[in-house]
Length: 228
Ligand code: FES
Image (cartoon, rainbow, N blue to C red; front, side):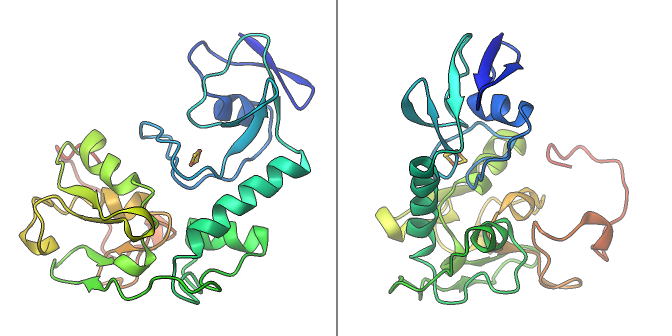
């Protein structure tokens, strides 16, 4: 199917999203809740475009034959920036400094400083599990870890709890991570865009931004793990 992105014709397969069409046109949109391995949720609104005259989240909107997509308008760029600012306003000051996370890179590209608003810090850390630690203050409730855990790993150990700006990831069983159904596959660490979920121990501070080759405890092995 053919459509137009920023005035250029693009061919994508039936069922593709606008995000796929935009990427096929060589345009890079900011994303936070999106991971190519997961079902799109459209929750963060950082990938907004104008499609056939309407504002739409590119990751969850299907491409249509003959459609037109605009990515570069100032109004759309402002809406995308607003979406990121709202997300990071709930983080503590300096929350992404030095993390090298997706969110840190996105904030840097937009010249946004997380936590300049009042924020709601103090959700606390859960370091009960030997292989997975959670810093709830860094959680933006994008749900990627929850989808990775359920869709890819098939474990269903995680959920989002709370309401509004207080929504954070938590073990689905309630209580501590160490008491949850987590099988320590590492999928949540790998997809977390903020560094809220990390691997402790050797290589402490590992996040999704850490290249696999730089993880000191990484070894190649055969496994039945759905994520690996
Ligand atoms: Fe599209 Fe989050 S990346 S809404």
